[in-house]
Image (cartoon, rainbow, N blue to C red):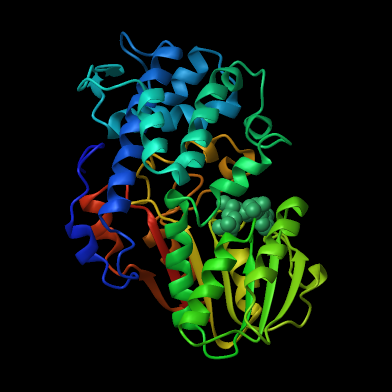
Length: 384
Ligand SMILES: C[S@@+](CC[C@H](N)C(=O)[O-])C[C@H]1O[C@@H](n2cnc3c(N)ncnc32)[C@H](O)[C@@H]1O
């Protein structure tokens, strides 16, 4: 696998002709390269702050045990060690690994300031990463829970800005899921969205459906957290096509839909963006969603996809600090590590849940990820 940061090959665009034209253009690639360089500088600074910069270090689990660090930071430490490796900043030793100097780089704060000056809309991606990096030492000392560092009254606005179509580092997943929803739907479809958050995926899906000349007849927007549900519902109402009925519901993907207000409901499309990897019992959740589909209906799983079942994701740090992200049962061939899954893992999971016609968008996702290991955006579609 090539190391990060890298010049993202132009050929990436040609490998994804099934995405809307221009989404992987020069502007997007340049913004991604800047974020990649920032993360490269950030991980070196994090390694120094955690006193990992000199001498041999053991594997992440032993490191956490030897330093008596809190278990709440275990996944973040694994992320740090693997991301240093992905950036070519480690070398193996007989007992573990050691940091190597790597090419000179500007300080992370300088790279961030320059990136935000060039594209101000990318600021939430930098702010979230900086917030997590600053919180990690206290999380490891057991003084702070990742959850509390990330989500509180002062950071809610940041998350609305992060999970937004104005943030170029988040919007692509929504665009791809929107394309998949519009492709799977007929005219006048009944659509259910799960984990709709602040409504950014809904905006993208409704835009794609409208653009495809397939306005839906009904849209059920669901989300677990009340603050997101309120915000997301307002977002949906703002962009609702004429004649489309909207309903909003608090819904937990880990429980039976019937007592949650979906008893007897049938949909033509069910979708979620960056939510279904949080399912505790993935097969049970997918089976429940399949039962909500009318015959021939489609499930669209818009997700950040790992390049391979166990590959690191250099953008993953914020999620590694959340309990619900890390505490999920693993399953060979499907979910081989907590959190985001690979395209092949999703395909197997959907197959195990009884779906058919399972396909990935972009179809050449694995080739895209093999030429640029920071390429994670995709959607998996399947029929009931
Ligand atoms: C990464 S965000 C994605 C938000 C939204 N899809 C978007 O793209 O703007 C994941 C969302 O899943 C929600 N979520 C977390 N656990 C959930 C669960 N068990 N059931 C339903 N939603 C859940 C979170 O509250 C959050 O809004």
